[in-house]
Each structure stands twice: as C-alpha cells, then as structure tokens.
Length: 65
Image 1 (cartoon, rainbow, N blue to C red):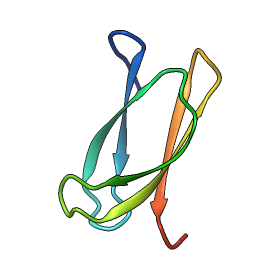
Image 2 (tube, rainbow, N blue to C red):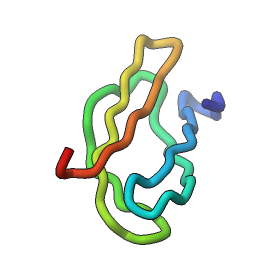
Image 3 (cartoon, rainbow, N blue to C red):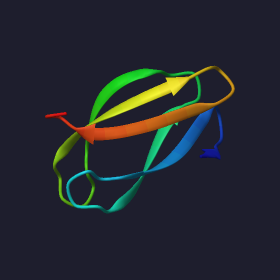
C-alpha cells in the first residue's frame, strides 16, 4: 500500500485470471465491493476494499467466488 495525494491510496493486486500485478487506486476512506476489469486480460473481478480511516486493504477474487 502506498499513501497517495489527496486521500488516494494505491494497492498492488494480482489478477485472479492472468496473474498480472496491477495497481488499484482508491480513496483512503472508501470501503465496499466493486467490479474491476483487469488492465491486461480485461476480465472482470471483484475488488473488496476495507478501510478504517487510516489504513485500507484490498482483496480481489473472481466474480464466480
């Protein structure tokens, strides 16, 4: 996780389909689930963001999981 500018935080995530590592940038106070398309293979996956205000974490999985 890298603290960004203006409350944005970047996370590295590994695509559950093609295995490529991509960067996901979210607002530091955002939490929830969203669909994200892999920048390499274009397949959609689920991104779960958990935030406690100071720290955030990202988990990815296939839409079928």
